[in-house]
Image 1 (cartoon, helix red, strand yellow):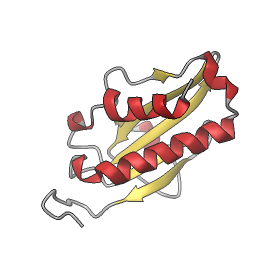
Image 2 (image 1 turned 30 degrees about the vertical axis):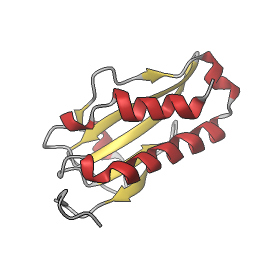
Image 3 (image 1 turned 180 degrees about the vertical axis):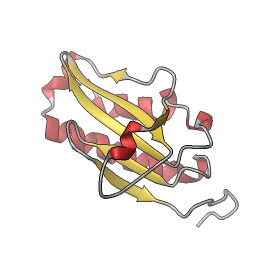
Length: 133
């Protein structure tokens, strides 16, 4: 199993960032270990605090077909390595597509299984597609 390819496919093809509602200011890319492998999913929130995770309760967005199960073979990779690959692919995707996300999305985080979300990227509010840097 090419875990990196599976993660890229889910991030870029399954989760449709064009349908994020206008209240969402933060996207949280999650990873978790389930009984038969790793699973990744995405949530959107209308509140964000760097110092605590209470904002995770107020979920406003979850893509259709959100939970992407990576299969039993995914367990051949230990949790730390899996998370590093996942985080790397999320960062690459955000960097390559930041201007394609709706303007209201300012914060991009990734959550380690059982841990707190880590801020990966913060962009200036209301950046427009005409202001490519």
